[in-house]
Length: 199
Image (cartoon, rainbow, N blue to C red; front, side, top):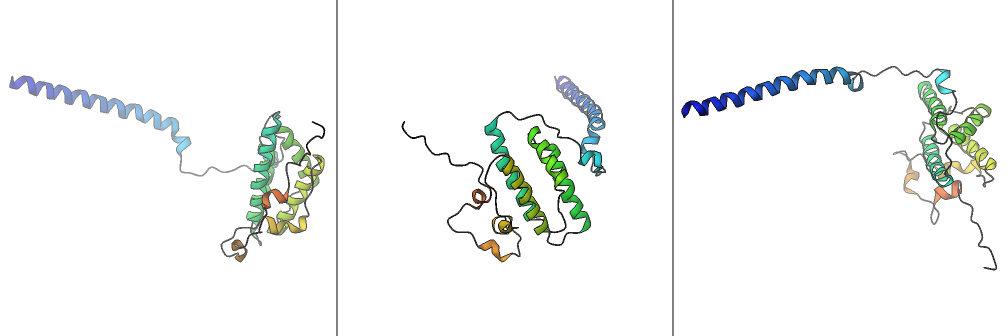
């Protein structure tokens, strides 16, 4: 009986060793297949004119509710990005913002919106020399979109009051405009429609 227990342990140890060898062997193939996805090396980024100024990638977005929701969220991100841009950017920071704006247009998930925005970028190229230049430019192009959509426009001279940079050293962080939701005041997306009379 003593030999049977030792045989079982030896057999179990052999099976475990075989499993480990197979696992490690298969794992080496998986590592080869995923090495490019998990590489710690930073790939060079192609920001050629072809990439930055190409046509919109996404198809038309037909659902008007989703389109409006997407627009509100996108404008919030867009204006906040411009408001947090450095006052005195380095050359590479200005180029990064310019590239971001063009890629934002190309990759925007509403194809027809992206196409219209691309036309605006050709007519009004991004202004990236400073935070205020970028913020006022962003307000101007947003107003162009609102005019096309027959929505109210915003006084761009007040853009700094609505999209504060949120910078840690900015004392205005503590101050809030009382009684107003600044996001809605900046560019009201939904116009109030009066109830029909006589119902």
